[in-house]
Image 1 (tube, helix red, strand yellow):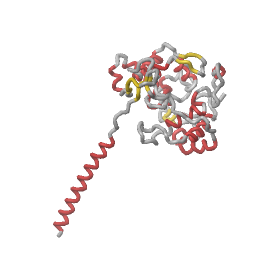
Image 2 (cartoon, helix red, strand yellow):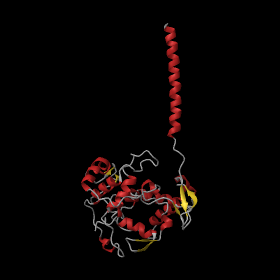
Image 3 (cartoon, helix red, strand yellow):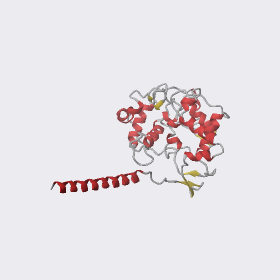
Image 4 (cartoon, one colour):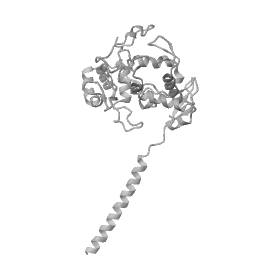
Length: 303
């Protein structure tokens, strides 16, 4: 009887082990990333003429200017640390252009090189890519412009050019700089404060001053205060900020690919929390007096 029990127990253990092994194999297969989805390449009439796939970074090494592209990628990721003379706060370019500028709806770099030069309503004139980048240094990073022909500027543009490689001028990849938001909704900053405490403060701090690592570099950027974007930045506008919040925040709470890409808050919630943090104290911007010279300023402009 004891022998039989041992045999039965042994068979049971073997079956369990086999089941566990099969379970592990099944889990591993499911854990593999699904096939990458492409984006349509559209002509001027919005007809699809091809398919764009975000290139893997390893392909940079195939380029004749690989060192320049890699330096541009690094500068965009670590702007505040590598360009302290030009960045006046704790933000990096990719604080807004998340996922290294590869993610739809969150200011991707995919179409950037093909889009400029372009007439920009805030400037009231045509601007080139160099001017646009330097505008971000002066507004979003509350700093100073880079030398237009300097190596740092060339490197960042090289990375953006690489992102759009194979997409001809006059065509565009079917991705958006920012997803839509319902601008007819009225902001409620009181509700926004509650949402901020529940969804944002863990990373950006109750005081909105962000979170630093042991080296003093920001892990999560400040949303207000002296180290944040100034009043002239697009992110200082309620509805502009809400577009970013809706489609990018909070990170790591969305299991649909790409992992971490927003979709947690409703339009109303995104607008409410954006109204709350955009109206907190932040640096001024003297150049704001020249904005929107040919049109009425947007209703969410802070000035």
